[in-house]
Image (cartoon, rainbow, N blue to C red):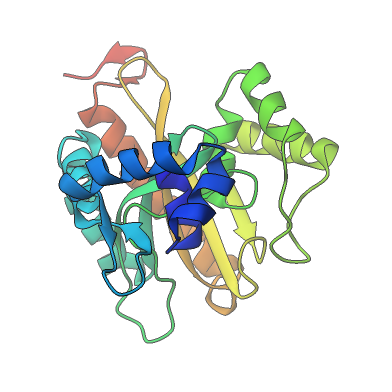
Length: 244
């Protein structure tokens, strides 16, 4: 029910009933509970429902309790100062990527992404980095699902995407050039924890016109430097030794 409201923004009782396949009585009873808990709001004039502020409060608590986000925040700010591009911190969230933090560029032309925003795994640099680190069965599950085409550059062929993920794993970074938004380019590297597992993606994003070869290489070097520093703080090993 909450997912239906998130998709449509605002719905009536009958619409929700049809969408999720429950009787109107059952839907009404659940909505009444949600309304008391401020998880949904009902417009008294139209009797239509929309998501409530309580869900935002829940989301804020999720971000607050995410150990990586507060740890990474100073590094994200430093990256923006050094590159002047928007920096994103993303984690795997079921079959997508959720951005748990971001610091925006100060330039007039920039990418804007709010924390909590979810994006696809196959059409973003962050998503490719995270997907390339997953077990083969998870990757195949994603490839077997809908691979939405956002732009003419989006990779929607499963074989092409498998090859792309192999390149990401070999190179240690992913890029996305006009694959999700027509004029946006992004570069992403993985962040690993003490066990060596990829726990997040660190990404720089901005207009494709600014990501020519030299700025792209400089941005990638900055990303790797910060990713290594964060990995150390998460207890990752360096040169075969555990970081203190």
